[in-house]
Amino acid sequence: MKHEESWDWEINANTKWFDWNLREIVSYRDLLFRFVRRNLIASYQQTILGPFWVFIQPALTTLVYYIIFGKVVKISTGGIPPVLFYLSGILFWSFFSDCLNGTMYTFLQNANIFNKVYFPRLVVPVSNVISHSIRIGIQLLLFIAIYLYNAATIGLAGNYYIFITPFLLLLTAGFGLGAGLIISVFTAKYRDLDYALQFLLRLFMFATPVVYPASIVPEKYQFLFWLNPLTVIIETFRAAYFSNEPVHYLRLALGTIVVLALLVVGITLFKKKELKIMDVV
Image (tube, rainbow, N blue to C red; front, side, top):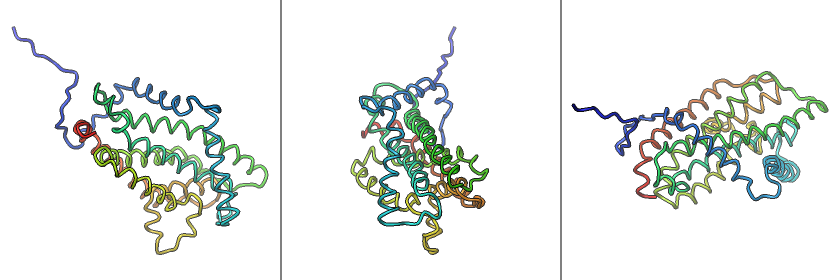
């Protein structure tokens, strides 16, 4: 008598569009957490100060920006204490940049693993984003400590919108992940894109209100300026912590739509090409 064979999973190079199969990530959650642990340990392994660099890096960057842009160039911070102004921009920019850079090299940095064993390739970029999410969660403690000190000494006009901070972090992570997944497919095939992208990433920082307020941007550039999800995220964060002005929900909704669109395109392209791309790495 013939018995029908059943398979738990099947590897097929001809995947369909929008065949994400995200449940695989849940099945491989132990591997996901191992990658997260590896990323966190590797970041500060063989360093003298170790995990303290989580606080030292943003603190030193804030100090440099404060001296250059606050004291030398004298760019307005819109009435926000300069240290908190620069620190808020640096935290979100660094989080986005780390998520993007860690994701865009997924195929190049993990080619040896991908060629030897099968597991959902999406586990690697997701673990990268989770590890950086843990890091910014710790760094926010530094921001909150300085914020509370300033609130006690000079007074700050925060409001209940501070409770959307987790959503802003989620948007930033999604932006970095979505853009990184798209770029990872192309950098695996065209290596010289790396140089162009690093240059564009530096320019993109100055198109984001990290060291200046959105109020100084000319009116004719406002629409393009607010199309940048990071602009919405950083300005919403500052509005929540430093003013009584309401959050601009229309801009926040637009930023959310842009991030979701990038995530859909990124995951779709990544899943479609994840097996074939290994032939060119």
